[in-house]
Length: 350
Image 1: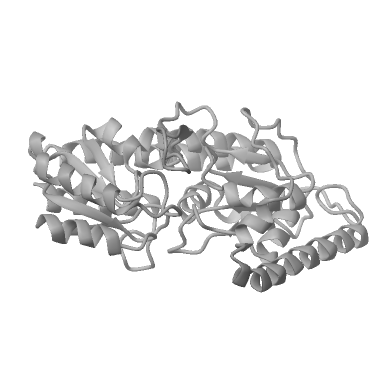
Image 2 (image 1 turned 90 degrees about the vertical axis):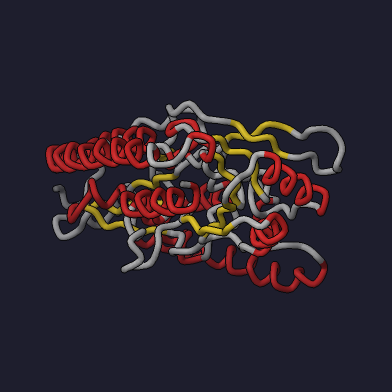
């Protein structure tokens, strides 16, 4: 690769870049301190942070050009979730330096970037997002911190499902929003692989054959995973293939593998507390359809899901949704997470 000193990989002089970066971090730190001070007045940091102009995700990913990276450095890659981080790592291997912003166990819907996260975004050669609104709380940080780094949404090009977001005033039916949980259908992650491989190869042509080989090997593993899920689902009686979860993260899974997603404790995401009437209606669904189990999630408080299960006399099982598990959990890779979840669903429903 080419040496690019004294400029950085975006062509900026290093002292200028650092001055801008320090200013950026100081501004966000001030916003965080203001958020703490204003919290007593009922103003949340995320609302304060997102009240300013933010990056707007385009419908198509940007055209990516090669970047110059010093001989003693690697391509700097940033992504949001641990799930995407595992997929990117499977392709990039030792040819990239990867930063995953959300730590394990973090709910992507409620994540707000830190000053360190903004620095990582600013220094990146590329930023990979899931897209479909999953990382909405990152849009302000991206607008301020991304510099010239391309922002690539790996779910662009996937046919997205929609969710009905309840009305904020309790009247009407609300409006449709995109369902971002695309990774629960394995072919969608195969789509990710194509986007990631093409992006890495365009940024770093010298290693394009390496990325292509890793992508081919990983796609083979994903195909095996997809086939395995279908064989395991056959173990569940057809009448039991019904899902009640903490929030509606399994729509793509249900559509791909032959389930019904009958309802969720949180209709769209866990940031909006359901009413007592909502919980009662969900319990009626559990009873009417003889649902064997209610599924909680590793990144969402299980209190209300536990209440539904207790009130209706069904069992509770936990699934991994927005984050990989810790090392040794069996869910510390994307493939491992999917297998762990499928095994939990089979155990609860068969």
